Length: 304
Image (tube, rainbow, N blue to C red; front, side, top):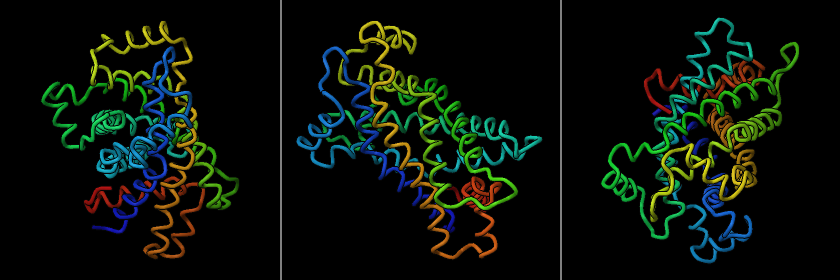
């Protein structure tokens, strides 16, 4: 197993450990009724979860994304890098936009069933494990059930990753080849995460409701459009931003953690020569530093 593989896994896991509690809040708030809410807000929700289940309650469902983080990192950065290299002008912002969208599309096929299991585990009243939850979905809904919400996942991930990569590239660009500081890199990663969520958040709300529809209750929606129409009619347009606060609060540190932990893991292990380490802070190699960690390990052919 290469050092790059380890660094990528540690970075992805660090992001999950930082952001998962807030993701749990997001899912509960998205699925809560605006007319008859169980929770008065994020703090009330936290109090209820911690009182009933302890800290374990806000980390429910983390096993699913932990298992999938390696595959997702491989697809996101691998497809992003390879797509960008095939474009005529890889340094143009539109190249980052297109490559990011392609990465979002392909990783959706792993992300969708992973998020389905995660979401149901987060709201489950029983202590279902990941395997038991996945088995129950397959036994009751078949293979198609495991991919419930795939179309919405694709509709979310394509613009989300396009916005993420183009924002990150724009914010880390500097004039005349000046090196970009670590603090600026972390700031750019955090802001990119915010932008990526803001542009697609209403889609994520509907995705959550579709994936939870019929779970421990009678199904209410025929499809995504029916869910959108009924949700707005019953709860107003405010439902499309419900849970946005915890999501944005999670997005900044999660993205900063992923990039910083990968970078510092590589540095501490001294696997990169000083000249190459210096290059990793250059404008053109800032985002490609993480990409190369992943694509190089894929060529070995280990996967991040």
